[in-house]
Length: 358
Ligand SMILES: [Zn+2]
Ligand SMILES: [Zn+2]
Picture 1: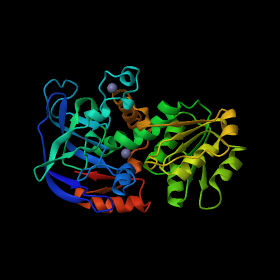
Picture 2 (picture 1 turned 135 degrees about the vertical axis):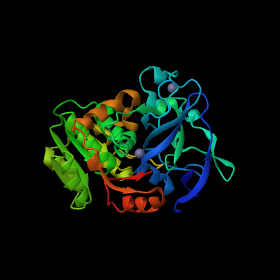
Picture 3 (picture 1 turned 30 degrees about the vertical axis):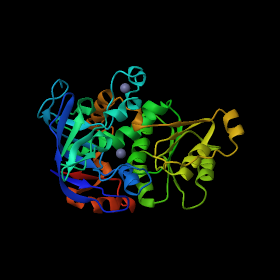
Picture 4 (picture 1 turned 60 degrees about the horizontal axis):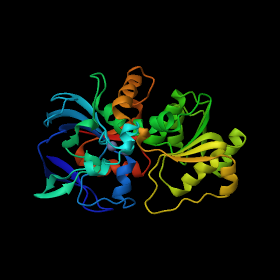
């Protein structure tokens, strides 16, 4: 099968023929239908996060079940499904207390050696490696989808929609009427914005440096926009709200914007870090004593605290009812052979989200 192989940081991906194993117990072979071009893969391509190379990235996908291994009962050949990038064991304390996204055994469920490049085993990124024609995944990563949902839409439910909407509804659980700021109006940020709208936020302030992104933010439900290139973003948010917001979300993955997110939260407010901050760096909290006496909170959100088999079906139902915009997130469609162009467009801020269609 064809796959986009990363040989090292800051090198273009190369389309190669690779081999994929047959599914074993508890595994499913998926024929990829669509795979989203997410910023998280870019962190690895740019060397800000590390992963053993050569490897095949990609973690936002949907497809059709080709074959199932022994003991798999939740899906069967021919089923269309979203592929989640969490594989939970169902047995550890995180799993049994309802937080499968934090599964303690998740890493060990990442398979080594089940895909091969030139006969040599390579790691499967996020237990998926979605920039490939087929993916060998855990059965519990598969979430069946209704026929009415297009493949590209389901792929986006698999990462950006779940991550963004879930950060609001599952991680932060914002009360109706909350004021919200969102730094970064890309694929995840726009979903935080529409999640905040769904949750009944009163003010939703989008912060970005690009006018095309702020325009998209308004379409997705932002009530106000702040152009960070025109003066201090924190001061602008404080001026709009009389001192800060109840919830501020970081959706880029930069230390500077993470700090700004904390400063945008008012006394008693919460900063939620959704973006992948670069590895090995420290976050500074200015005047931490005052901040914490003011009961400010700083929390992380991973994959929208997903419980994929529960959350992804309701996200797709809201899409069907046109209460969640997903078609509008898809700016461009590419072939696998055009993946480097797709990442170039993402880097240049040209797109909300683009999708590789197989
Ligand atoms: Zn992603
Ligand atoms: Zn577990």
